[in-house]
Length: 224
Image (cartoon, rainbow, N blue to C red; front, top):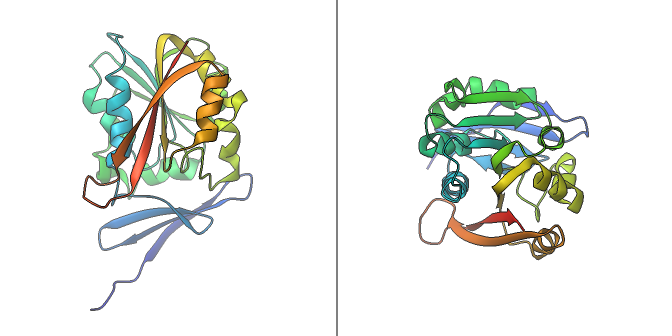
């Protein structure tokens, strides 16, 4: 059997020197960070579950939603699919290249969610957005890197720290919901959630919904 080769579409580099690669093969798109798999359109069920599970927890009639990390747009698409028409969704994405890819070759994968009128896209660090937005959000969805236990890009490490969690807590309004995607369970992150006075539970979600799939973790947290 002839295996189709990967075709490199674009590269990006963070201020910290991390390198991201966008490549394509036979309908599959991948983004890699420093040579490791970061995300792909082969397995995005858990990214969609991140949005659905979190929005099911909010009682806000017109929720204000912050998504940290645009990725390939699957979390944003799922949020838009279940959010009411009066919802407002802010997406914070640090890298302009990721934004350009989502307006270019990746746009059709999630149904062009950036074109929805409810979306405000900000080219910014989600930590900075939260720091400047005390009590502004009913739901915060973090789909950053591979989660707190498997950070590939050094720039993302601080987000999952105690200080990062305190920023999330301040940015949430009363009865706000924090949801964090993670490739694996993270006991250390759970300890930090406790230390920053979050009540939380975790949900296991199959990457593609198929038997034998990797099980990803969704952390759902509320400030105590």
